[in-house]
Length: 147
Image (cartoon, rainbow, N blue to C red; front, side, top):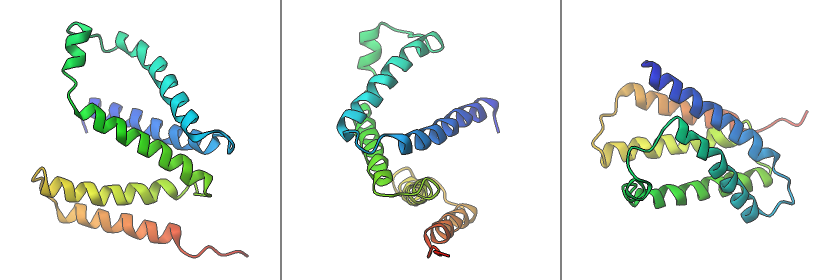
């Protein structure tokens, strides 16, 4: 594994663990839309210093114009993810299984999208991994004993 990829994955994994832990900690009475706005304002403030690590290579207006329409798709996705997990945890979703369920379904969907839309190859190893994800969902969401 390339060091840059390993570092990027470590950042993403750390962020996901922190995300789910903190999402579960949001006060049950907090207004969900207000919580989303607070999340994004906080994220915007925390993002500004990242310009020191990733400086602009063009004027701001030109760089912003080059972002493209996918930004709105990502924005919609972020809102759906944030709101979905916030509501799932409030509805009693388990920290240990809510993400596994969503990640497994997302994995299956992205495998299919990669195959159909991007013509990516799918190996038997990937299909076996998907099977293990689905088995994990079954094991994690199975009957819970009350004794």
